[in-house]
Amino acid sequence: MIKNFKWLLFASLAFVACNNNDDEVMIDAASSDGKPLTSGTAVVTKYVALGDSYAAGFSDNALFKLAQEGSYANVIAQQFSLAGGGDFKTPLMADNVGGLLLGGNVILGPRLFFNGTAPVPVSGRPTTEVTNKLAGPFNNLGVPGAKSYHLLAPNYGNVAGIGGGTANPYFVRFASTPSTTIVADAVAQDATFFSLWIGGNDILGYATSGGSGTNQTGNLNPATYGSTDITDPTVFASTYTAIVNAMTAKGAKGVVANLPYVTALPYFTTVPYNPLTVSVLGGGNIAVGQGTIAALNAQLYGPLKQALTAFGAGGRLNLLSATAPNPLLIIDESLPDLSLQLKAAFTADLGVATATAYGVIFGKARQATKDDLVVLTAQAVIGSSPQGIPAPLNKFGITYPMQDKDVLTKAEIAEVKVATDAYNLTIKTIADAKGLAFVELKGVTDQLASGGIVYNGFTTTSTFVTGGMFSLDGVHPSPRGYAIIGNLFTEAINTKYNSNFKKVNVGLYRILYPASL
Image (cartoon, rainbow, N blue to C red; front, side):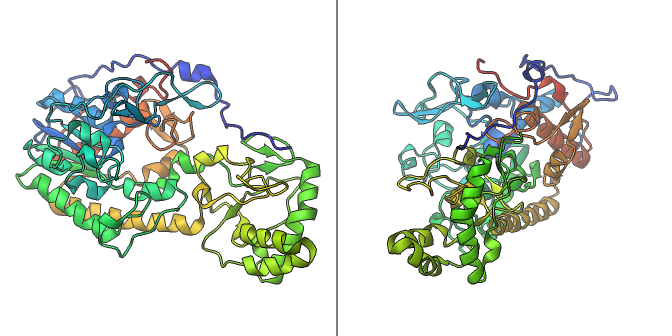
């Protein structure tokens, strides 16, 4: 009756294949006007990068050697090296498979590649063992998964804390001591220049979990936060101030970046809110069938609509259309719970047991709207069967609501944007107060979604898989995406410090990694 969700992947594979597969990108020691490169008023002899997975070079749902070498921090360091910059040491993974081992057990799986139909894991087993300590110090201190306050957290590199969530396995590999902090390891290097891009994970986990976490605004104790919670803006401001103060205490200059709305990432914009149609017409639609739609309207949607209307909530649901795409059925936890009312309405016709089930299932249900965002992982859920639910209510998104983790509702999106705006106000205020270069990245996502960004004759968009900006996890950049980010940082540095570092040619960077590296 219902076909599997189809990926929206109609671009030619030849287009992907024609992109450069040579990962050795040549750089030029002269600026665009032919003059020697200069750092201007910046001193780049010792550059340290602070941040999260973006600084580390995370891509295709994993961290691996080649992606690390193409991180935006490494792109910047390459340009610095042409104007007096020193070595830039990165805590490289052991392979290009990606993933991590802890005591020989796989705790994070390998990277993804596009097999012509969908993103799938590469073959092979991770060989990077967390407990194999690396000798530092390291210039690239980007730590995947780190939130702002983690940069100041003692024992974040203590292997004993991994199981309890107080330590990060990536930082465990290269922390100078188990009790150190990321910022302490940065400060110890006496950096003359630093980059800082942090705060995305303070919101991202909440968003990718469909708002399943808690908005901790008003809670000033991050020790009580969960991994999918939104960080209180005051906590962020205090943390960010402390990080910048520590990095500039000895006169170092630097560059900071603000935060785009994470809801603009392909992870949230790829799966349509209304994929249910009579037949598959492209665009990722799911065929329901005309007969099925008629039956659903008669046996489920019609009675539910009638009952909800009687309770003043008829706007939650409409009959399915045989001619237009139909929205998914979802749970919205912000709605008043009408389970008892629905139970009462259906008891006479369905009996107490079935009517009670209807009340529980549909008490906070509604159809999705264009203001809701269906997360990327939900593509595998639509049309599947919830455990323990009998027919005919056993189709997620059609006869059984998509759960909270699958959809970011309009109200939850607003929470993400309010927090982001507050963080960005802090970042800009501190950048101005400290005289740091500032990268405006919040507006970049708008450009990517509306026509794209043009660099070196290549148009890059946020379209999943084929757009060129983002990797196959829908969150982290592709090689070309990291090159573009590196260029944006370079532009800000040049503007602030009167330097003339040359931007890289983004056309020399892949848009996708192949299965074999």
